Image (cartoon, rainbow, N blue to C red; front, top):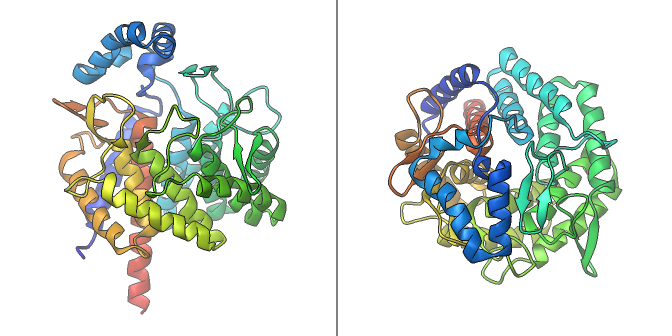
Length: 408
């Protein structure tokens, strides 16, 4: 198998860090078009009336396809907690890989930002979006805790605590666990499984939400030596296992309305299962991973072994490829390549294409390959930070492997 070009990856990380320092830690987002009042009303109309709503959102979708830089007309740049968490993890991995005190300090600075951006109105520490998010079920207001955000922050604090042992980070992690067990609700799905809510206020049913919670609480059961956290995690894990389709895929939700299968949500679920299995080995979990990876390899990669956005799309898309898919593909490959040989092959193809086509002259990444051109607007949450984290993790694992080979 061809070796990962580690030197090129390291150079890219250094260039990206310089770009990040110059560009700043706020950005636009793929939701920018719909985060303001005009976009939200158009999106809400789309959910109520497909025909009229399509006409309302069409100008924004057309702009995204033909002039993506116009999104800056719809909203100011924002700071995204989920991006800060990924940057904190990326710098933590870099600090470990190179014994780099500067990277360790940068990781801590992102945790400090997260301390400031946590949701107000909640006793325990939790995070959501910095904008009002219009969904088919109504508006999720800015600052509403999301189970798809807080676990990333937990992981970020966990990785930095692993480096410096600062009790401040551990206390924050304990608060996050209390939030996830008390404020996020559980709803029975079967005698052995429960689905968790996405926010403190909904009824659950979204697969990746339960996968996130199961993974975070599996970590917490070990970090705090509390078996009761695993008992909660286990029921959410069983929900994920029981909702896997016979072909190995997962729908986005069990509500019947959102049965699409896409790339990065599939990666989210498989990543969580892989992490849980590494903490608490489980044959059912391992079987689900194997089935899921088989589906992934056959349906979510093209003939060049590059990520496809959807195997079953919910609507027409304006792009061919997505940076977020590349970032999550790299994460999944790093987790599973030692167990599943094909994932190592995919990793090589994805890294080669990333280095060849996705790097901008300033050191940042292209955001999307559109049908006719590129979306070059840098968006921290979508997915500059995710790519930085995935490449930093890859560099750490490659250096660890090289060190082990030298010892052997």
